[in-house]
Image (cartoon, rainbow, N blue to C red):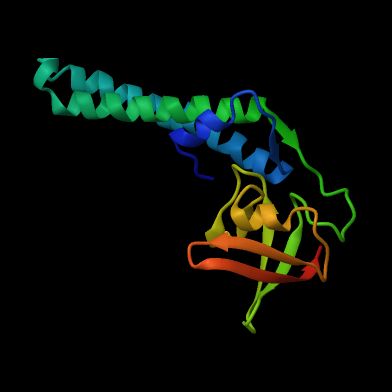
Length: 166
């Protein structure tokens, strides 16, 4: 799961939809950051401080930057977990929502694509998990097998037929 500083601002004051698997993955990442990455970063800062003059100590500045990145990610994950709303796919297996497995067919194509609709912070397109707030995800939410969804793309509107929903 990847987030950037822009996403951190989007979660202020909002509940965040996650699957249980997504929440578990975030908790595991948080544990690794707190138990391993942060202590390593702090240790690097401490060792770099021993090199002397901090104003020209590139090792120190690099280590501090790394420590700040780790701490920022810890803070982001903590906020996501705090605002998490666990989505269980208890809704009808025919209506697309977070947690649904969807098969679509692009108009004019013969190649079907199957993917999971994931919460905003657990999408991983390389693993066939698309975000429910992505352009395609938004267009599919609430639709059923047999419906069509239209997505505004840079080259124009793309139409998809929903082949299956699980």
